Length: 468
Image (tube, rainbow, N blue to C red; front, side):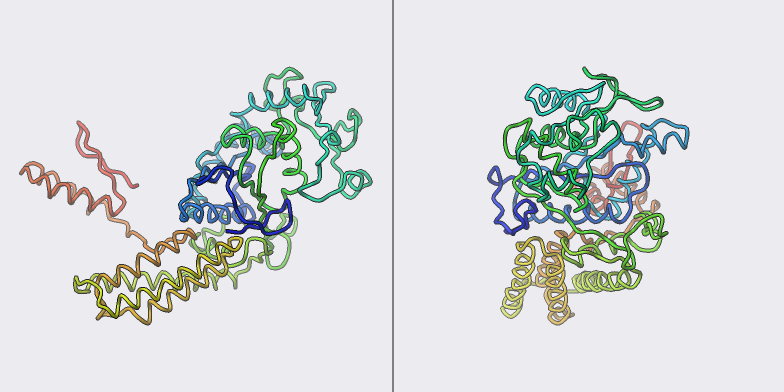
């Protein structure tokens, strides 16, 4: 498996730090509003990367944070006259709803910045002790020039930065030893949330949180650090400096970054009036369509969002779902027979589409070509499966299609929602079977409901049910 490493600017063979395991950290959103479709791209892309590693048998520890203390959150809280905590909790919940709609799997851990302050204070203290950081009037700065490899990810030269290619200056720059030094801790301002530290009551700088959370939940060295390409500099560059200075070892072996998303060939911005949230899109399309759209291009290629392209994505996804539905219909009417010799040969030929899918994913997670391989499989299914096919052949093709689309996070085997009255009727039948001591039938009904996404719980008050 090869992936493009931003650090070396070339494709490299993936070799995990620990055999059979993948430790992956993906920078999450700052939760001050509904997530926009620019946030959605890395969520979908790197969820797909995770799913492919799992498909290949790796044990994946996938960590993605929520930044729940930030100037934007504080500004929103002041505007609404509520606490910053209320704002962040509200939009974390809304973000999770959107992630569920996009079929983005929950991370192994979703750490919150506000719950990791102690670790940040500890790391900042270590950096001061080692001479990489210093305090001035309650603010702690990182000595950028003290880390000799600064710029190795973004391939920027410190002297170029100093002369104005891009400034790292923040408020209070007159206190710095060097204008390029960046903030690790800053004193509180009136009305802001604050935490105790040896330097001042205040809060951490943005960059330090990911270094601390990655170390706590994944260890001092990880396999993959990922995010949007806008994070390469300065965020990820600063993470490397902090982490490697504190831990004394390479931070991440591979760095992956997705390209920007434009709206109708323009950069998305509120000033242009083309700012689109995922929640807004969900009112127009099933979010599976948005996911399909995001995977229709290679993650390192710029992607343009438009109504025409979304319609094309809707139609493309429909072709795949229709093939799955047709197979289910045929299975329902097929004879319960094993595959014939001809069907065994036909099924063996379909392995070529799996090989094409895997070849695309092994080549730096080329989801565009992987989707093309799925379409090839769909075409093959539509031409070889019919009313005369055995159930075994139809089931094998269906399983193959579902397995590949699941890697892409596309749901083609949709469970139909049951009506409450139908659920209650089945529960009543199960209770009757139990009274008659027909426990086999009672178990069959429980399994039938579970298959339809309904979980039963036997309590003293009676049987309760909930959707899985």
